[in-house]
Length: 150
Image 1: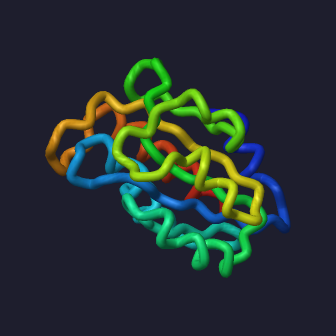
Image 2 (image 1 turned 90 degrees about the vertical axis):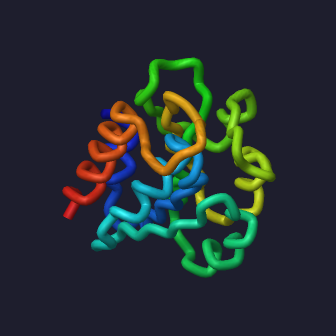
């Protein structure tokens, strides 16, 4: 677990929106979508799934008026598969988001909320709908951490 994610989840009175990004047909790249689809909205926590078209959801995300926006996506961080990090938007310029038309570092400039990236190191981006065991396992851990904050 990252203490940074736990700290954000413990902030009272802050609306947190998790946004799942990724291509469900590219194995581990579907992890962000898998996580956002399994977050149960409660209290100050909500989720939105945008898959590969986050640019089409800028207005929707801003209209939801979150205090904190957490974009969930697979990120090449040169870590072991299944590792994850919570990064402030400004910390992602050197990381790779392989399957998107627009860089997440660039897209974060369009949001009014404080933006973080929850990056998950993929095992691979091969074609197929199955997420690797390591990435699915950490995704379930993240889902449980978020859903247990009731």
